[in-house]
Image (cartoon, rainbow, N blue to C red):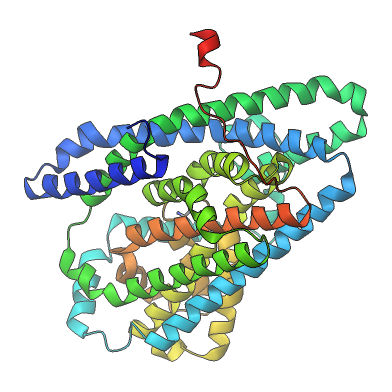
Length: 441
Ligand code: ASP
């Protein structure tokens, strides 16, 4: 398998995992997959999460201190946020246009709605999302701002609070600039070295990726139990997937026009991160791989990727907001057609933008925030469980697809910001896990 490119190895692992999952479904071997296969996927995700926090800290502190100029940090920050907001707005508009044109929810037969309602309305997955959404809403209006400032960095690291860690790293980086080069050097060297170590860990963990995606995909397949309902929701699902594909097309145009690079080259280099996003449904778990691909394969300077990617994994979720726009209107088309006004759709644009910023980069987070989007337009509370039940059956596959778009969006924006700051290298040299193996074996 040595000569095969990494993305092919991962694709083979995925396809075999899917086939294996279907075989296990047909011989009632679901329990076997849960007990003996799925844990390997969990180990892989744990390892990625394990290195995400040290990676963000090290690369951001090193990156900021390398910028050598506080005004450059402000420039980079403003550009990043502006482009992130811009791409998210495009995503929501694409989503709303498609769902209004295709109208996947209009005319859904009453007996299908009843069937879905009976099956999923009281499902633990649905009630859990509603409970999480109401916990999020009980907080005051400025809670999101307060939440950026940690009172204990170890607790923030332990709970993987990304924005708190980013704030701390920025704070340390700026103070390193302010104490002068001589005093800052020892600490910068430590973070530089830590960054190298964590990147090497990414290389090693990725050796395990093809096997891990096998386990992850097999585990996803055994969870699909009702193909009849899946088919009924096909039109809705295709609207989301179509919108997500258009969004990928939009990124490729940005890469061609603004970054002046070949879209195919970009896709080829970023594909391992996309495949992992698909398999794990979590942009946070994929972050270390996204960073490795963007820095070592796409040539974005650490100073830029160290800031743009962790921030993006947390606040930029174009796939999620596109999905929220489509899902909200689809649910209205099915059970609350009176709500389908132009004003409500404008409110959806705004709330889906904020919701994607507030969504955690973990599986299914987009569905929790969808509840908040729906509530913002006065969606009747008693219909909420039915609304979520309607889209629940296809949420996991759509989550996998929207996570790919979330990760691709972050990578695209990091290239745009790097290009605009002259921090994009033409000839990146990827490091391999065994570059120094001969010296130490
Ligand atoms: N799973 C998505 C992510 O991690 C979030 C969501 O849309 O549910 O990027």
